[in-house]
Image 1: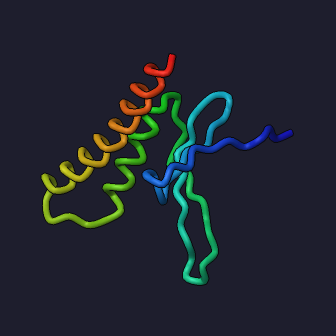
Image 2: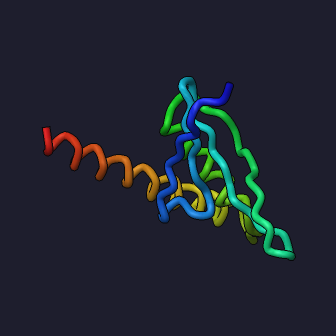
Length: 98
């Protein structure tokens, strides 16, 4: 039997989101067909949130073409750092409350 599905759907992650289960974080990407039907593509299953976010950053960087390896690496690092900063801000906010 399926348990309640749980998600992290932050607009900053769009078109990505994270499905949560009792054992891992599942990186998902929403895509749309030409007719407008929504599909969910699984990027992967990860034991740690940080690794899941890195996979999202990598997939995001791979979604376009580049003229150089340097350009690709810079885009990946930019997206990865953006997502890590979100976690840092959340942790700072969370720890200040308790």
